[in-house]
Length: 342
Image (cartoon, rainbow, N blue to C red; front, side, top):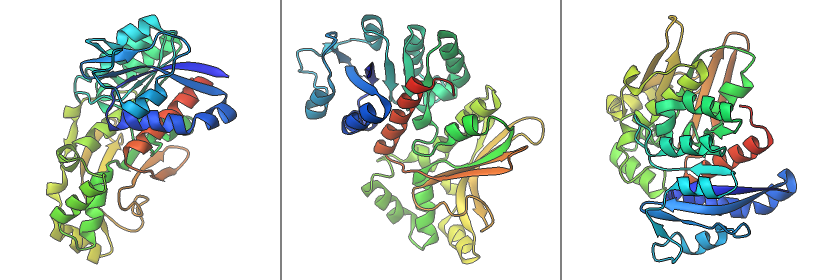
């Protein structure tokens, strides 16, 4: 049995879902993969809980009680670096809300963990948008794993397919429906529902955030597009390099008109290297039935890669919720513990 210490940074919806799913899958992890995860520290805003006793696993306590600030072990001002220094290196699971341009504070924690010989798994898009390739280089130099599925598509294995499965080819361009909220809204609008009631339904179902601005504006798709592009093409483009139009560029009347003509309007994220330099754009575009992403409806996502030698490879599906993101992080942990190379 491979017993591995886990430090969780960020205890919002995704962090809680990760703790819950890890507990549910504990027996399967042991039986199928020979892995035992031991939650040793949890950090939230203002401090955290650190269990230095090697036999203590905080998982059940965290599921039952959360991380209350009145817990006698809760230490105000405690930072994740304390856990990296005091515990035997294991895996940092990071799921903070990070600034999309600086990547902080998540980027600093990821760098600190990797520098101290910890594997790292992130669900935050900010640090990848800021310095994805720098983090990968740092992990290689320390001979530890660094994975990021939850930040680049969650249940949709976009990064895994693009980087690993297509390693024998060159990706010339790719197109993606990378945001489940906007795809849900466009699907409902195509069926005749007005934007306001479609958004209300998405929020009731937990698909849309209470404040959906980053999704609706197209910036969530832009960040994911930037991450995948920099990873696949080994570049260092920034958010300012992405041309972005959100759903305001797709009035309901246009969506319904396209549907009547047998087409579907999708918020399409496109990376193209055809001109010798990479161009990135996000915008609503009508797709006809021949397009590989035409079947992607509701809150599902998809990505289609055009390669020089493998043709077009398309991946569809994947839920858009905290449990799906947690499952992507759990997958990353299994793969980095059993196979560090990505």
